[in-house]
Length: 113
Image 1 (tube, rainbow, N blue to C red):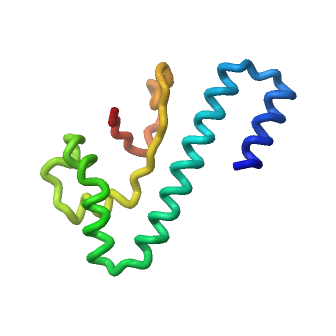
Image 2 (image 1 turned 90 degrees about the vertical axis):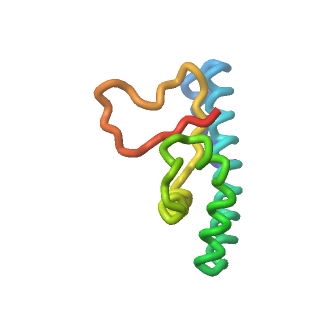
């Protein structure tokens, strides 16, 4: 994280990045760092669990998500468990765009407020 902050500071110094853009980038870096750290520790913890327990824990962790996103409703628990290990949070601030018209779509996004 320190290396990323140092790089951001270097970019700010060299390219005179305005305060608003700097703050937005800083927030994104902090959010990403926090998510990566907690996601890695959870992944490490879950790797030590037997397969069935890992599946049950993944279902419990993502239960609210599966209930609130129509795509997941009525899907088999095995499918939900399989997908749950690939879910990654993405912090998007208004008025940012997730996709633009004519852009190749390489992954799926689910919006949760």
